[in-house]
Length: 311
Image (cartoon, rainbow, N blue to C red; front, top):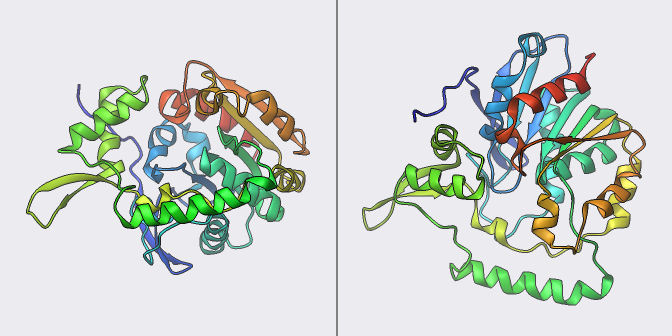
């Protein structure tokens, strides 16, 4: 099967944001409609949204700038070497990104997985900057207890040492086909053509000191270091309560949350947290898993278009 054919090619932009050189994909153009900002999940890249962007209708796409950054340490965004990443920095980066591209204009903000968590937190901290908010499978984390803090800090320090020893290095692949196979193993619904295209966005060839070339994931291994901070549900709910934008929560028909946490954190528990959001509606997308923007880009595009209109 041939590789995926892009219908709406993106433009690459590189901008300085908070000591980082951020890589940003742009589609469309500045017009009367609010910018649409798409933020990706953990160990992913901005190009992951290409299938959904291609599925947007002409009427929705025209006269609208679409902005999708590679988060710090992912894709082609790069900056100072570090041995861990703090979650708050994603909010600071998003704030700087909107300063650069949107100015005082409120944006429509869409986030997937980790990006969905960032989007929800940002919309609570900067409610005036978000017109409408879409969270794609950004569930947050299981509740923690203060008593877990000593062990969490110890684990964080241990994993920094493990990173320095190379024990957290990401797997490399002999070729792009190996990367595509890995993507298809993770997502059983991903067809070969899309996997072949994504593989070349998700990874790149690098030649080592031995002269051999391997394909490396475009993600810093330091992202695998455990956060030193506990996940505090009360703080998250306070952020949720401060959101003023109408909010759409889109979940996949597969219960990815139950698969990840095996009853430590359930959809029912997450939905209870969502009750803190003043204006929130939920939608379940059929026949898809966690990467719903890969599995059902057309259905997702229609859902987002309906929610964001009128703009």
